[in-house]
Length: 388
Ligand code: ADP
Image 1 (cartoon, rainbow, N blue to C red):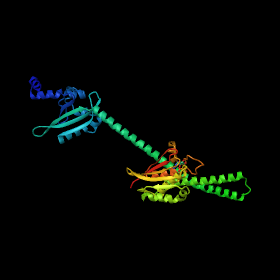
Image 2 (cartoon, rainbow, N blue to C red):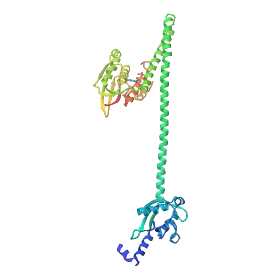
Image 3 (tube, protein in one colour):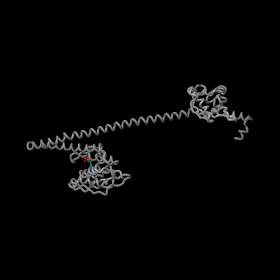
């Protein structure tokens, strides 16, 4: 194929063949400049890209194809100087067609020297890269837009988080102060009701005695509620130290605190060996205490049997406390861990804070707490704590 093509070429001088070759290139503007920057040759590609015919441009200075700004700031001279100095220069930028429209040119300029090394001029090869440039610009623009959007969303989120943190802090402060301030008047109600009851003893009807008793009980209940609320708030306000402790020590302390309740209810508590964990001893004691107290309080008609164990689960220990009590219907399994949420009223005393306190403590230790249970078949409370 190639051989036939060569053999059918018209006879021509080497220079003529070269001119034909350059002229046939349409995708690139290829032309010669003399050492002063005057256009000396012009191919078809140059005419197609820049709009000038050879007749119009040959003899003109090549700076004519630059923008006014570039001409003013000396860009054409700089390109020539660099090509002369380094023998080659690459450039990208806006150029102006004959009709005044702009295109984005990617240009290579090479110095042409004679045998003695004298600079005789330059070859220029350039290509219209307007489309590629537009895509690049669009990509750059999109990236900038995205960056701006991410920045402004991050800023908004940070502001929201800060507002939330402040609101939370104020709420904690409010809870703490009101709980504190409520304790004093409440103490007064209790004390004076009891005084009143003592002084009026004998003069009160059965109904009146009952009312006084309700008032005293009410004040006492409220005192317990406020105490628990304060304890709950204190968990946020005073972050406790977590250190390596044997969790069995916390269980023992909880059982000591509950000794009377356990004896009175003939409860049996059995524990497997418990692991070392990173925790706060006082707080872990509180968790065991609240859970065991509940297991005894919500007993069935059988004496309470409580079984405690712990198994390794990934990088944590999973504790389990099973009881043979009244159980909890599945639809309440989440609710019981919320503040003041109770499933019973008067038949079981309580404030509805015990499990909320357990949840807060466990979560502050980086763990999770949940229950598995159904009505009438006992409950299994689970919680995780990070292993050492
Ligand atoms: P309180 O015991 O003061 O009501 P808690 O937060 O400790 O508050 O418990 C919330 C509710 O969860 C209780 O009112 C009770 O209905 C239920 N509950 C907790 N522990 C058990 C348990 N071991 N067995 C059955 N029900 C339980």
